Length: 203
Image 1 (cartoon, rainbow, N blue to C red):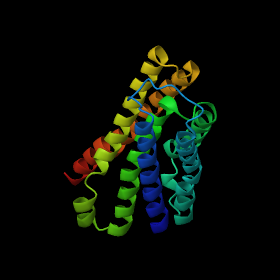
Image 2 (image 1 turned 180 degrees about the horizontal axis):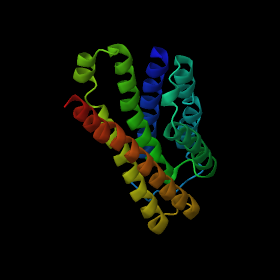
Image 3 (image 1 turned 135 degrees about the vertical axis):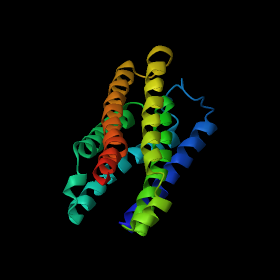
Image 4 (image 1 turned 30 degrees about the vertical axis):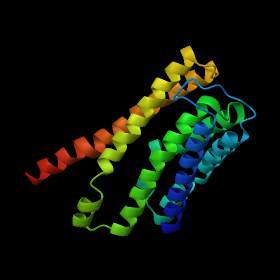
C-alpha cells in the first residue's frame, strides 16, 4: 500500500507537470484548443494518463485483499470502470487539444488524493492523529466535486465554441453529472448525516 500510494503520487505529479508543460509549449489557452495530430508529446502524456486509469484498479484489489469489502461501493466500481472507458475514447479520438484540461486537472487532484491516502496509512487509526493530520479529507471531496463542476463548464464551452467532437462534449457533460450526484451523496452521508447521527447517539 505504501509503494502503491507513493508511486501514484509520483505518477500524478509527472502527468500534471508534463501535460502543463506541453500545453505551455503549444500555446494553449484554458479551453478552446484545436487538436493537432503532430503534437505527439501531448498525445503521449494523455496516453499515459489513460494507462494510469487501468493501473488504478489496484485500489480495488488492495481493498479486497485487506478484507474491506464495504469500501468497494457502487461509486468506487462505477467510477473506476467508467473513467477507464471514457479515457480510452479520449486517448483514441482526441489525444490533445481540449483533452489536456481534464487530464491536467484530474492529475493534480490525484496528487492530493494519494497524499491523503499515504498520510492515512502512516497515521493509522489513532483518532487524535487522524483529526490532526487528516482534517482536510472533507475538503478533498469538495475539491473533487469542484473539479467535476469545472469539467461540466468545459464540456458546455467545447460544445458551443470549440472544435472538440460534439458527441464527446455531450458524453463528458452527462458523465460529470453522474459523478456530481454520486460524490454529493457520498459527501452528504459521510460528512453531514453520519456526524449528526453520532451526535444524537452521544446525546
